[in-house]
Image (cartoon, rainbow, N blue to C red; front, top):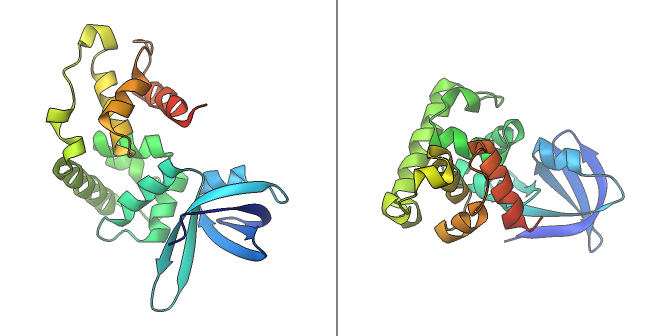
Amino acid sequence: MIYSINGEVVHIEQNMIVIECGGVGYACLSTSSAVSAASVGEKLRLFTHLNVREDAVELFGFADETELNCFKKLISVSGVGCKMAVSVLSALSPQEFALSVINEDYKKLTRAQGVGNKLAQRIVLELKDKLKKDSSFENTNIPQIDIKAVGGNAYNEALTALMVLGFTNSQAQSALDGLSVELSVQELVKEGLKRLSGK
């Protein structure tokens, strides 16, 4: 399993980044955000997923572990292949994707090319079911929050969104601790991710 690649970008296409590492050029199918952040001649690290089929071996590359984690969740959904998952994450940022699933916002998921209403509904339904079975997402693990102190449902939704992105309950709480009660869910998630990434 190739977990990540770190090397020089030697070629870029609309949905692909080629990174040379150890004299080998690895073609990584990537999201639009990863492609837009890459520049030929510069060093870049991509977190990867190797997809092996009977007729092809494909390497998918992501800007960070959050993107990779969302990708893995998407391909676990029936009817969602690797390229479709990349399409979703090209249309939506990881935090937008997480919030769409949590809020059952099917329409937002249909922004991705090839994703219709039925598939969007299946993504939400299947991922929510899996999250309920995962002990780290059970309601019992989400502490009772003083709504006045943290700004109500926005905090709880942001907390859940960070957990959907793969962080533990304690990591998510620490990332949101002390943030302004005036922030929206999206802003809370964005600031939380900045803290978790050390930026």
